[in-house]
Image 1: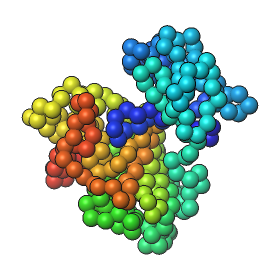
Image 2 (image 1 turned 45 degrees about the vertical axis):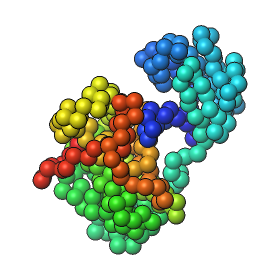
Image 3 (image 1 turned 120 degrees about the vertical axis):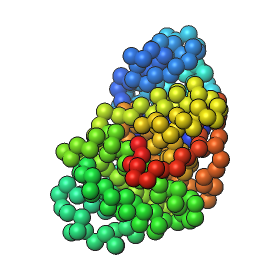
Image 4 (image 1 turned 90 degrees about the vertical axis):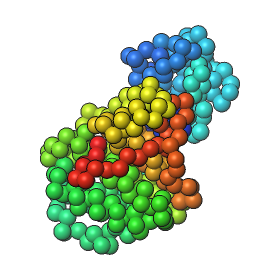
Length: 295
């Protein structure tokens, strides 16, 4: 992998874009990476590959680009570089969110669940589950998620909250991503270290418009009755709400069909409703109705 450009959408949510030749950045929605700000030109910057290394180049923009605070016409990107595009900023990283090769692979499209030693596997530090989108199987996957996280360094509300968040991510991928198509797969990657626990959930759907949920919440603002009605009735918004309430970081890929949830071991979990510039952060979590699959 040639690295990723990460955009901070809200306090907890990031969006990541794989560095690739010809990636365009600008205000126009025809760009690969869209930054909606009047200080950003229509096609502000272009990423190219030079000797296998990503280079960012100003495309004759009105306000130019800065890398680590220095104005440049072009610049080869290295780990941790902070790129300012008008009033917006991006961070370049070479670090992968999870190790490239899983420690253990459980592929349920090839072998049945009963053929794997799951009592042993749930205790391991790095597991990839490949799951056909079959509804009766999902109930067992939710239980496996719980068992894995119960073996993590998380405790108390942080542990139970992360279980709910990962289960919600899997549920959303099956419901809204793969739309319960048994021919499509979910990938659940679970990695734990002494400092943090990470879950990557990817589906084979067209992608979730999480920004639309944030925009609706922004328009509602802090009006309690309207906000609670939105969170209760939103078909695709409740999953984001539940995940944000229980994790420290949420990262979506550019397509919106992969989400990475991270919980730090020593962070404080949960919390009251918090609105930052009208965006949902640590948010109200409506009670799940009996028999509801969420979404």
